[in-house]
Every structure is written in structure tokens, then in C-alpha cells.
Length: 379
Image (cartoon, rainbow, N blue to C red):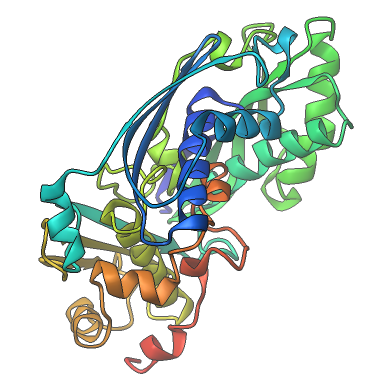
């Protein structure tokens, strides 16, 4: 008898308050790297009604205007009208930035990790991008909403929004979508019926593949009846609060560290990217249908102190053999990861919304499958 279960993942638009903060922190990181690739950045942002607060540790030769960068982010997202409750031109911006601790710096300068921690990478063969289907569809839904707003196909939409997708699995294979939830911020003079009709036809039916749709698929749109007030006017946002949206939608494990606002000397970010790189290549090489790898670091030490591989019973090669192959041939030091993935570039602003993984963009070097032959050697 087939084992059945439901699994749900969510995503948020770039105008969600937490994502405003992630994008602001990463835009500041990008500007530092644009001028000084050796700059150290740990930047945190908070936003609430009419206010953005930027804080953190930045050590660099670069000259940056953090308030101006934040305003440009808000403009790009679409907070250009006072009626949205936040306007890039008039919102208050406060900064409190200091240099990186010298104790942390001395560990990083020698090529060691900037902190302790454990990082996870995950991949599965149920989508072309080797991402879990629920988070993949959830991202695609909010990306579609954003594009329809920006292209003025649905000009009544505002920047804030969320999605949620529930999928029925049978024997770990996605069978069908059982429910879709959309929350779309909108102008107050639009009827909820029009919003539901538009988003069903132009978003849900365009994004959810026909093979996963059924007549019984539940659709929930703006269930409170209205979503005119959104963004920082309605909800406080903070950098690093959407770590499950940023990764695998709750499938697999998470080490707890967020990504945005951190330069790649921070293993929270760079080692998580490399772990995804390894997991994706293992699945792409046909060694397994599902793969999760954990690596762990201690501050000041270059190489991981532990590795753990889980192929969930789908492997064609012993997990210990794969780990040995990785340890003997790949450099997982922060410096080795940075060099392999070419991470000292201003590429991070675009990672800060719609997920860091499963993206078909040449700058997302951790999504390459150039280790396939390396892993196929083990078959």
C-alpha cells in the first residue's frame, strides 16, 4: 500500500517586509564587494512603518551610502507611492555601523571559518532544478504575481504578498497539488472577486502544471477579505527571518544561520551554497534520487570538523564512500569555497528574494552541475 502524506511550503514576494530587509542588507554587501572584494560585511536591517534601521559590522575600504542604497531597493521593489504606506523618497533611514571584531578577523584572515555552525545542502530529482516541488511552485507563484504587477498587467497589485502550496505525495513522489494559497496586497477599490478571478487565471493556472491540478484543488485568495494595508505599514521586517523560504521550503534540515547581509567568509552563507552544490551534483550524477549533506565548522579552522550524508535509502553508492571521495578531493575551506564558486562578486542582491537555490542564473554558481563526472566515477 502506497505511503501518502501532504507537504506544504510557502514563499513571499520581494515587497514582504522581511524581504525588504534581506534585499537591503545584500544590496549593501554588493556595493562593498563592487569597490572592495576583500571587504567584510555583516549587515542587518529592520523595517517598520515609515522607518528602516540598518546596523552591523562592516570593515572595508569602500565608501558606501547605506541610506541611498536602501532607497534604491525600495524603489526597485515598487514602494513609490505614499498610499502604499511606505515611500522610498520619504521614509526615515537610520544607520549604526561599526567594524568587524578583531577577534573574528584574526581567525578569518588566516583562511579559517568566521564562526562555528552546521550547514545543510539538499537536492531531489522531482524537478528539473533538483528542488522540492512545493517550494519551487511557491516561488513561481509569487514571482508571477510580481511580474504582473511590474508589467502593469494587474496594476492594482501592490508589492507585498505571499504564497503557499500543499502537495500530496505517494511513496515520496509528488502526485497532485491539493491547495494553493495566495495573499496579494492590492488597491482598496478592487473587488475581491476580480482579484480571485485574475490571480486564478493569470497566476495559478499559469504556474501550477496541469498534471498536478485537479477539480478538487482548493484555492484560497486573500482569506481575510482584504489586503490593502501591507508592507512595513502592517508588519515589521527583519533580515534573516525567512530562512526556510530561502532554502528548501522545510524539506530537509536547516542549520539555523541566515544568508543575507553576510560576505562569503561567513560559512553560514558560503558553506550552505557549497553543500547545495555537492547535493545537487550527487543527484544529477545519478548516485541517488534524494540527497542531504551536513557539514560543520569551528571558528578559525579552515576545513569542516564533520560531514554527514543521507541518501534516504535511494543511493547507488555507499554514503561513506561518497564522503571519503569528497574529503580527499574537494577543498571545503572558506577560501576554497570562495575560489571554486567565485563568490567575491556583487551577486547577492538578486539572491535575497525568491530563494537562493534552484535558480537558473549564471551568477548562481552553486547551481552548476560540473561535478557530475567527478561523482560518476563512484558508480
